[in-house]
Image (cartoon, rainbow over all chains, first blue to last red; front, side, top):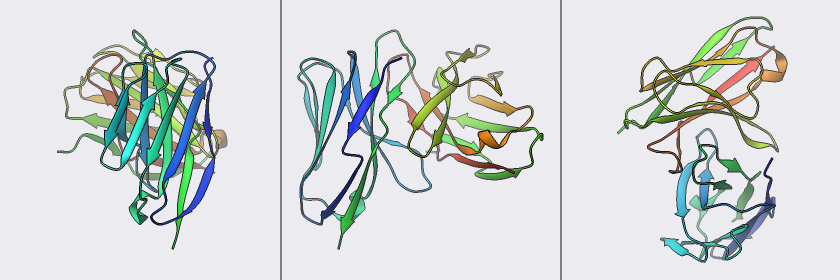
Length: 111
Length: 112
C-alpha cells in the first residue's frame, strides 16, 4: 500500500521561530490534507490542497501541494505556544474513500 | 455545532469481553470511518461506510465489526476484546468521497 513519510518526527523550537515540515509519498495523490492533533482530541483539519503546485494559507500556516503530486509541505510562521501538537499529513485520491496518513510531526515549543 | 461525537470517551475491558463504540454525526455526511491510533503508527483505517446500510473493510479490520443502520450513526463492535486492541479509536465523517474528513475526539480503550 501507499506509504507517507513525514519529517521531521519531532521538533523543538523557541517561540517566534518559523517551522517547516514535509511529507513524501511513493505514489501520487490528488488531494493533500494537513491536520493538527492536540492531546486528548481528534485531528482537526488545517489546510486542504487540491491541485499540484497549489499554495494555500490559513493564518500563519502555509501549505503547498508538490508539483510531482508526491509531496507536500507545511510552514508555520512566528510560532506561538498554542501551535504545540502533532501535525499529520494525509493523502487522498479521487474515487477513493481512504485517507493515507503520515506518522506525524510532534511540535514542542521551548519557553 | 456538535460535529462528530464519540461515546464513550474512556473504557477499560477485560480480555474476551465485548463492547460497542458509538459515533454520531450531525452534518448529514454520507461517508463515515473508524480508525485506530497507536503510538508511532499514525491513524489506520478499520472499517468505513459510504452510506446508510453499507460497510466496507479498511486496512486493519480483523477483530472488529461495524454497522450503519442510520445515516448519522456508525457503530464499531469488538466481539471478543484482546489486549492488542488497546488503542485510541477515532471516528470521522465526510460529505462526499474525496472530501476532507472531520474527526471526533476519540475513545480511549484499554484491554486488560
